[in-house]
Image (cartoon, rainbow, N blue to C red; front, top):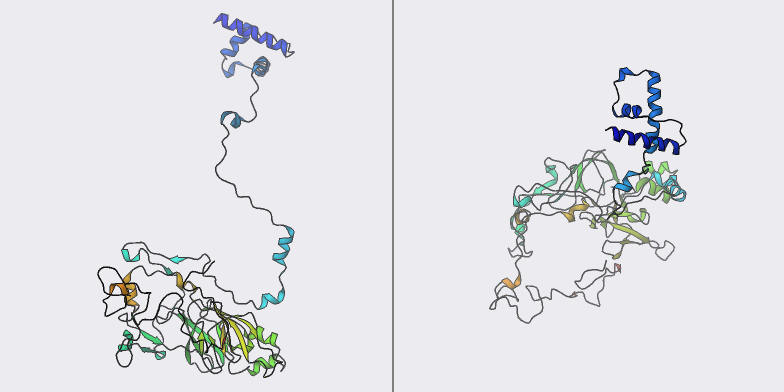
Length: 430
């Protein structure tokens, strides 16, 4: 031990000479470092001497790197990327904030994109029938019974797809749950404000219906509800003409821009000549004095494309509307249309989950013609699965595939301006 202490003291002397220190470390001082006494044996001056004695030992320590992580851990490249958000430029900020004041007063109805992200209601698969069951979330619907004076029972052999002579005219119909047919007003000829009491589910159609209460007489009626309509909204029909109070508010002069700003609201029914071009409508009629015939199912709509020139011979007679299929039709300027999109747009994404729910909906199974007998279908009969060297046909011999046309060339549809795209049964190119 004494030899080690002498070696350490010589090393301390050499290090103090190298660093220019005049402090000399003796053997007793080294022993004091190795075996420090208790805290109470030193005064303030003793601690100062101890610190001076430790200074050469501090200088002997090698300099360590500033970053221990780079020396202890090897560098490994990451296998994933880091998302970097670019700062918004001043030009883009100006485009967001510079909105016109006129557009904030009367926002147009928004088209509901059914392919956008949305939530469907799923269920815990406690039974096989609910494993693949998916339904649209419609918690705002009325939970009670319908307004009975506007309904009638669906019964008779017509429920099974039969006509008055008992013959099957519509296949794959029969059974199903008991239903009551809701009487829906597609004409909406009654003027005046109507209050929306509630939104209901109609088992006879895909879209939802709204129960209206006329404020003047208290008479109730059903209409096809637009997307976004809720209880408490007030809607009105302008098919009978412009009300006197609305005409007085415009100063007795009909201004098309002011008239559209005060009437073209969601759920209002107007003649097509009063609806501005580019508006989104549903429940579109075809002629004057008749009800709606187009865009009545869930999520459907049409766009008002153009109108006839009022300076031509005969004046403005027709309005062009574009359907979702791409077809452009011309309808009467006095035909009706409702502002908005038909409700329940996510109906097309629902899944029934089991075959029994099809039967509850009055839909019977569809049997392939190949599985029938020869007396029931042209594809039936034979040994094994063979339909013979014949083209696919219907049970009555009509070609069923390949886009077989039945309209005569000499009798075109005069109301169609631009026909829809037909691909002969093939998928459309996206």
